[in-house]
Image (cartoon, rainbow, N blue to C red; front, top):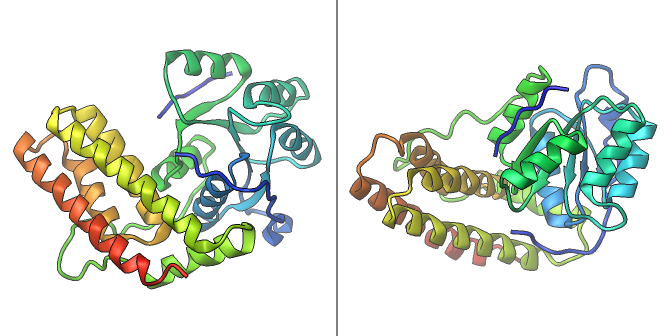
Length: 274
């Protein structure tokens, strides 16, 4: 089997989302997402749905194995650390049962040991949490699926909104439909994650660590896009794209502008979190 590799948890009650109605339609790509973290699971599902996938979810490894035996999925996304059956054991069972889906590992920590263990278990790809739209595009490329991604995140200007009303309300609907926690609690934790990532980005810019800057900007873009934070997502997308060419001073200025974008975003969201 050929393998390719790329590369904040928010706790929530175990909740399994219903199967999408589109699963019965021919030609619709299908994905199973197995993750015991409900918010992480929901955010991953939302990204895949926006890219045209029909999505099923599982809350642990055992449920994921059972689902994979009931239905053939184009893609299976598996968190490595889950109750009942961890991701490694779950995928070994899938492969031993003849499951040939493209299987992607989700991990909070990506290093050579994790890569090696994933390859030995039968994963095709391993990605670092959280999933973002570029990861979805890479997965689609692996399995020759054409997805429709937002191509408007280019340059920050006076017309770039801090928060997309429609995207934010879509995120609210995803949360209230699929989670038991209050929306305010979930969005507060999402904003805390974005703040932590911005802090890490500041440190990477201070150290002039271009690899970390690119990686963190990539992760920030995914989280910001999920809740509709257009200005922040656009800013960090530009940082990711231009990091190799900018001077350290220019990068530092852009990173601090991203922090300002986040500050404005937090102020706006606080008025709409209930």
